[in-house]
Image (tube, rainbow, N blue to C red; front, side, top):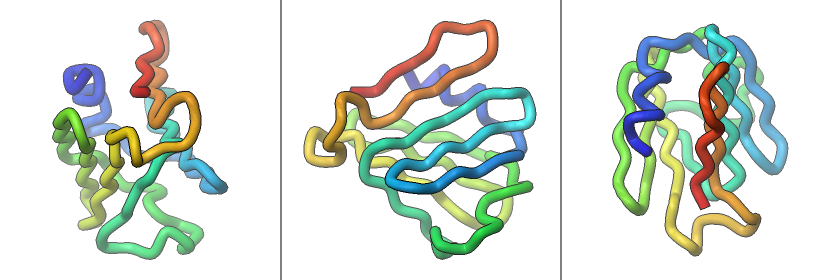
Amino acid sequence: MDSQLQHLVGREVVSVLCDDSLHLTFDDGSNLSVFGSRTWSGRNEGEASWPLGSRCLEVAASPSVVTLRFDDSTTLTVDLRDTGFSGPETMVLHIPNRPIVVWN
């Protein structure tokens, strides 16, 4: 599923919604929703503007973690382990005109 996430490389974040979950919308209409445990390094999640306007520079994935690095020196790390989420899925990627990808 790392290959689907590579689609986000070079894309700009145009919308951010953060409540119990995190929803990032990118400039091509792609949406990444994170329902599980996540950490941001380089910025406080409470800041209203993060990571709005940032471009995704790199995506790395393993069976236990997904990391997205942005051009504003921030990094989003998503815990994919069973202990990292409490809902039916930990992360969902929707790319327009492609099948939805779910990590659970």
